[in-house]
Image (tube, rainbow, N blue to C red; front, side, top):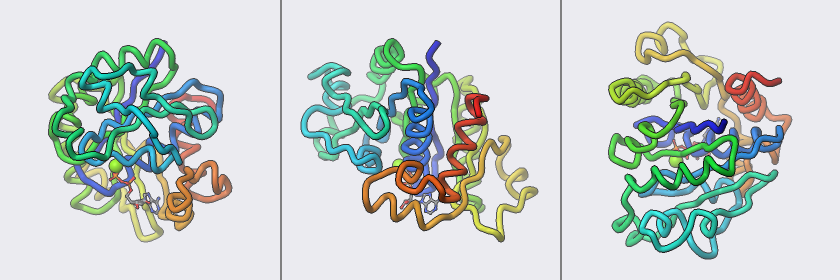
Length: 234
Ligand code: ADP
Ligand code: MG
């Protein structure tokens, strides 16, 4: 049985793409057959985080019916499969997020785990992944504003019957999180904590996920703990 996770938060810059890339890589390293999908149709940057440079078709071409899922899927690090988006403005204008449903169904036939990165906001390209996912993984920093926006995503998920698995707190440093404040602003259990770590920025500059480039870093340990919490496997 394959599982589909939407990685979501209405707030931009909180670590959704970093989380999708690193969680996908860890799960793939552990032997799962994983595909990551760039569901941020307006600002796709998942491929870059994984060192994948699509030289041909992308998810946007699949959504407009111009190509197949298979032709737009690329090999990423550690056996991970990547379905990237197009960075062209015209591609965004012509792609319809609702067409993601058959794409995800196709990917489920060939992969154990499908991770869908999503964009900020609450528009269709967030709504559709929340709707089609088996589980929603929220991502937030511990800033009040980010927690408030992430709570909105949780509420939207709840309203449409999505199963929220919990929140990954990212960019956490010693002075936070204040657990009480997190709990008062966001009604979701904390599933993993990823500390603020310069190794993430260094990894991104070389287009490699931190779990592969700096496996000894504290951020990589946070992402391994997240994978463990999700799969129940050490
Ligand atoms: P989103 O997809 O939610 O917009 P990103 O994953 O693109 O967010 O992350 C936004 C920025 O934060 C990126 O520059 C990324 O390198 C940085 N970042 C994410 N997580 C961490 C972390 N744990 N430590 C340091 N920087 C981080
Ligand atoms: Mg992103």
